[in-house]
Image (cartoon, rainbow, N blue to C red; front, side):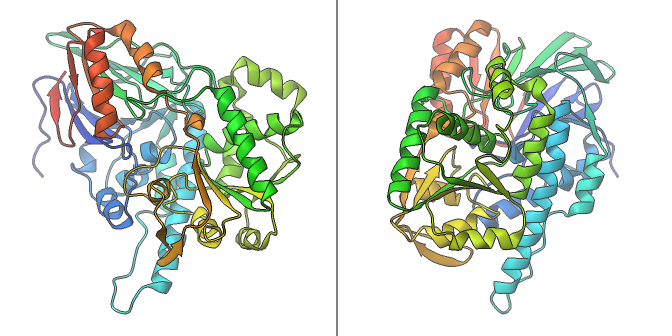
Length: 471
């Protein structure tokens, strides 16, 4: 085997979430070591996703350690595959992220196996058999490599390389990553925002100030877009629930089981406790959401003051007063026969896998029902096709007519919008500072780049996959 090339000076290579919003993965080579910032799933069309996730653009054995920003699957989902293919180093993250990653990856392996079994049962004669990317054993070996470090605690990951996690306010345990690298020519600082949260979202604390860096890797998911106020979002959610209930229909909400589901439940609890919604059955149809909610209960140190006060008077916030958690398959199937009205929250958030596919398949053809899109939908996903109001979609190999009402509620997003990103980054503006915009489609990245250059940043780039820069 050839020797691993050691760069003469630190370099940064971009391999995921480049001009797109999925598959976060960036490589830093410094002081004879190679590290990854995130190792996420690419989410898109099934065939493309399978190919891009299976093959890495480098040998996993070359990577010495991973720094993980948070537990969403587009940031952590390919870790078991990395381990399966030879990565043997530690994976650093915050304590809450470590707990959530176990939930996320276990569910990911289970969904892959279930989807593979379903597709294999229905595949055409002569088509190759589908295999999951990884299984539960690979997940187990991955979880053994997780090492938790608290927020704002500098730690040495290798000689001359120090890291620190800073609260990103996006998801329970989410972190910005600040790297300090000692070189023969002096110190280099790199800041990776991961996914940056919003200041006024419920449950979590607001994001901390972005750490200064010579190079800043910033998300730009909603560059050029402004979210509505949280109060307005709650009002619109309530209106959608009432309108669907009056039709006697079901409200189907595709939502990430970790983060978005808990936020929606928080809003629904507040509305029902205030007497502004009828008493409806709320089903959270995701075994992962059940386990994720237990992790939320166990980490109140991540909550903001308002949520802690609300929990004192409403300890059932994540409990069973209004919400029924569905774990077993036969209970999920039975929801298709529920007469309604009701609310069904199910994963995945981009409608690419999991039980949400079956709920959409059974409910899209009724005009009484509503599908509420509550988060960003990447290009090529079923969720994006629904947002585009396609008259028909393919689900699990079948064509389904879209007669249900499809609504979008981006105010529930846990990503900072354009003004919030600009407000967070502008205090760091400097002609000598470089910014690389990631985790956003090209129009969003370009809109934010223009604003950052006007704010005083000297070098703002939108890298393509495979781009390498010196630090």
